Length: 409
Image (cartoon, rainbow, N blue to C red; front, side):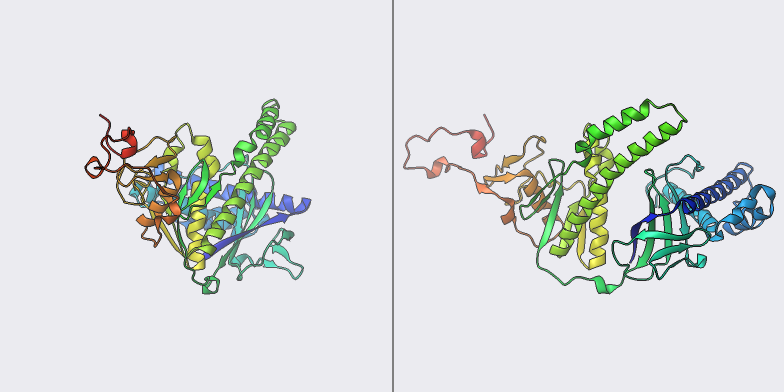
């Protein structure tokens, strides 16, 4: 499978200027190609092909005074920009056909966009120097903070400038079967939530770090300073970068937490099952900020690709599975319960169940994993014997009908 490895770059002032030229040229070619295709569509003409656009907007444009500066950057960067436009159109049309979630039509890029990226393929003849620097054509040797070793020779590298002004090199590498882990016995179901980020079917509860909530005071202060700066000024741009860096710290901490937890689950369990959550729907409720702060979708995606990478089994059950309504002991469906009910008693078998652990066990069972309910931390409720079997007691002791599992009168 293909994986991306990202490393921090530290370009010099001249290299930052060269990268800015590459970002700008790639953006101009993208916008020119988009304009050509939109013009052809409005006039009822055939859709221009990528080869014709490459010849017209790159090769021939370099010989004109208006676009002569396109020759200052690598031609591979410009060609990859046209490929990005093709991908955007393909995703748009596939969404209309129902092959993928619907998305909007391609839009023009702006020089004011805070995130910029260019991609170099093997044709660009980029390389890693003996001094462990990244050599890019017409840019130079960039200093890289290597945090780990690449498993194989990368096929492409993408240079990204994020909203906080940081530079990253993202390598695409192929991984082989040598990364498959030895088999282990445990299999686990995972119930994701807000009170606890994850609850496992073995009874383990993992607290939610709430990175955004903890950083709200600092973010609020930085945003307030930004709002008071004059639009278009240098001070406003500096304040915007400070806000972006504050948000980047939150995102980085959340991503690191997701990586550590997902790797731990994949290494220690042969199979992992999760529930397909309707994150978009939950993000429209009053819990929207907490839902986005948890980052469930990113965590589930990490579990999925790491399971494929290390030879584990990953199962995602349907979102309509009643995991919180079914008793993991006897399998009787007890109906929906409000969110404030964290512990409930099964009316059929009398087991007292923790809501989250019971749901995690049911997630594992629905996925067909070999788990038992012994980890659900259940206990027997004091259910009195039926009256027909209590012959030694002339008068039954007063009890609550709810404890006995009998509907109230």
